[in-house]
Image (cartoon, rainbow, N blue to C red; front, side):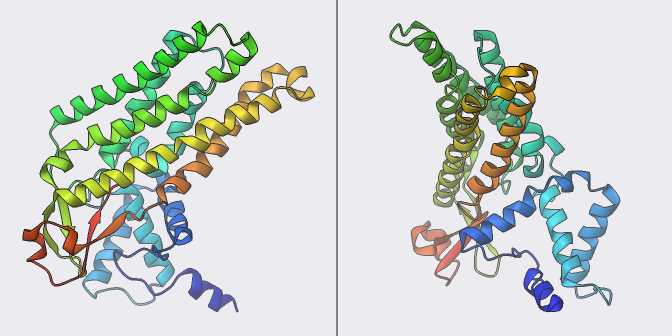
Length: 328
């Protein structure tokens, strides 16, 4: 019985394929739980090299005897969490998907702090979009190089859009005379959501605009590169931008609602010093729930009908479907 359960949990290993069915939301959710597993942040250089070597041995048929499917799947999990799929270079720890929650939660807590001033609003929006810009850049489709000038241009546009929208909404709410102080304070807690959601979209588009100009690598059903497609790039950015709109919904909407109730409880009214720790735990739980939910909307290796791609790409394959790395 235990052996059967283990076989179901760790099916026969296929190099480069996901362990779970990527055609279903549940399969993608399980897959991305592996990708964002914060334990991979503590993988040593020695363990990473061992994992990469194990996968290389499998690829070339020189796998040592006794290696199990579980070991191979764990090795691929480590490689996918630490190395970029296009460049095979290490992604800096704060900008990996496995580091998004640990390094992003303090920023979310700052964004949702009550009684924000103009200076704190600007600071937290700047810090949030700076982190997002680096995450988007580090997890982009990197089949073609992106110059530093384009990175800086995209970063500036993303930060400017977030800060201007957040500050504008705050000023509007403060000048709205029809709101009483309590209502105004409650509404201000929700200001980060529209600012972050709009800025997240512009952040993705601006940080990865080079993909729209140059196209991204497209593969056939056997994984062979068949050209660069601007049409596939549009699909990749559209799917990624949608995940960035969904992502802040639970993170920036649920905590203000939950905290508005918790702050009225006897415990927090009697012990106001506990408000920040409780607020932090609520934000951490919301972030941990939202990230795998949002990035599971679409598979990382997306597919598109070959007939919808450029004619020069269609002429290079007989397959009805083509594939591309949309990024995360």
